[in-house]
Image (cartoon, rainbow, N blue to C red; front, side):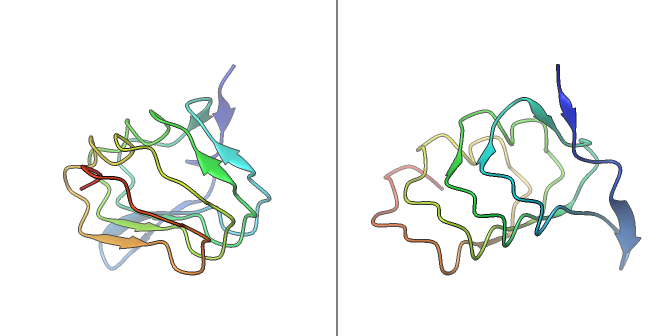
Length: 105
């Protein structure tokens, strides 16, 4: 079964659909977490997250801003952001990333 993370926290700010799931202790983001496809801004900071699995963000074609700072992500899959064609801002600050894989963007 899918975990309904949003639209429970959906709201509108500056005419954008925002989902804030910061400080929710999400250790791993995978395809069992459902995000409403209308989301344009997604806040995932301060979760202690260690990984984002391939496919976890695939149903977010309208995502413009993705904030994932202050987690514990050490690596990113090369196909992770492939379907985020509207993405213009990505914040990965203060994650212990050693390298950025070729073809990530």
